[in-house]
Amino acid sequence: MEYLVNAREMKACDEQTSKTYGMPPVVLMERAAEAVADEVKARIKKSATILVLCGGGNNGGDGYATARLLFLQGYGVSVFPLIKPAKDSLCEKERKICQNYQIKECDHLPEEPTDVVIDAIFGTGLSRDLEAPVSDVLKTVNEWPSYRIAVDIPSGVSADHGRILGTGYKADLTVTFAYKKLGQVLFPGAAYCGETICHDIGITDHAFEGRLPRVCTLTEEDLSSFPDRKADTHKGDYGKVLVIAGSSSICGAAAFAAEAALRMGAGLVKIFTAEENKSALQTLVPEALLSVYRSDKFDEKALVEDIHWADVCLIGPGLSTTATAQKKLKTTLQSVSVPLIIDADGINLLAKEPEILKGPHTDVILTPHIGEMSRLTGDSPMYLKEERLRIAEEFANEYNVILTLKDSRTVTAIPYGKLYLNTSGNHGMATGGSGDVLSGMIAGLLAVGAKAELAASLSVYLHGLAGDLAAKDVGAASLMARDLLRMIPTILKKTEEQKSICRP
Image (cartoon, rainbow, N blue to C red; front, side):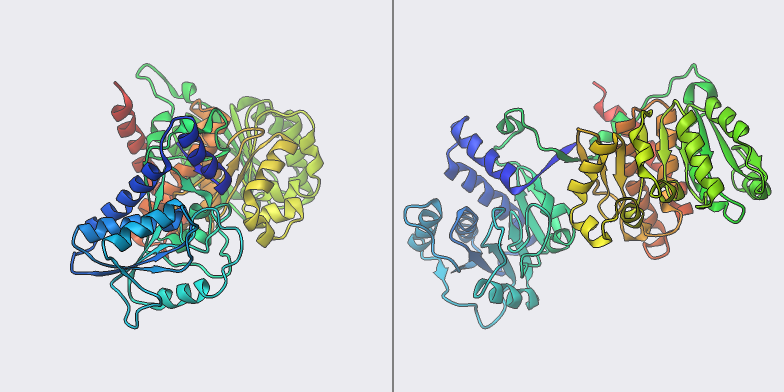
């Protein structure tokens, strides 16, 4: 797990590292410059021409220090000061060192593009729109065929939410320090960062002094948290999942969710669905049990019996939004005493009367995409995208549910707990059935013994990894939900490999 920080948290870490641990700010600056220079040396030939755009604060100081280190390594470097440093600041001292080494200093952009441009104008503290002449310079170099590098974060990208502040520098590579910033992960900022590499410069979790960031992201090391399976076990040890899904005209969603739960290791999966789906589901998922009802006669007693049979319940995929479907949702909420996932049409039904969630309930995980969340809260999709972290956190707290808000950057909010921002996955996963696979994965992970927080956050990460493998195999444009199902065994094999690495 890695923390993702905003501008305020990063500034506090910087200051605390110097104040409490005695790390001189100039050492942090030098280490940051070394990190950038190392990345340049790993990628760029010494015959290349390099232009460093420098601001007047610490980010500019990083830039001047980087220019000096590259100059001393034999690179053809010039610096372009866009903002005058304050007197006696670290930035001014680094600039003076460059002048002492007679590193070329420009007063305007070169007429011909350089091979490499390094942006060290503004760091994470920027909160206002960029103006001329800086904005004009960025627009120009963005059009150059140069390889563009950003120091810490591209100028014009908000570190807090990834918004573009008027004009943004479009980097091929961003070298950031200590922790990745939220604006480097959230779109559109993520697209301006290019490849983002995080370097240790001497700032550790101790600098948070116990007030850890609320946002984190899972990494490959977290695969080891997948529950163990033991040799002396049987199917009953790996949980029973009830999938309440499908309607008289839709069976694919139920099939995707059921197979995903089985692929995640669930011992038994039963699908409660309309009888019209019986033949198709017996063919699509022969491993699943079926409990069917007549479309014109909902058997509430049968549903309650199946709910009491289950260790985990999932409701919603392909369910429809009829009055009968609404009754199924209410019956489920009133009867369930095990973890419950509500997805797809289950959320659309819930949007009609979300207050029913405020009554006492077991662990509930909601998995809306942006459109479903819009119907649930009444907020516009655009607003939800911009404020997803805050809205997800507030909703989870108000209704005491785990909320997995699906999008290009899915956020999983734990009531009064962490916010998990997912970074796996790709645009090929924007396809019908993808969400049904995810809800089934969550159900399967709950069935094999994971707690609700882990089941939701880790399933999202694994779902994205499956999407990344599928995109490599068939291409993102051709990716379908069945490709995600096909890749689940491969990613679960990776969890076993990670466990072996983590064991002493």
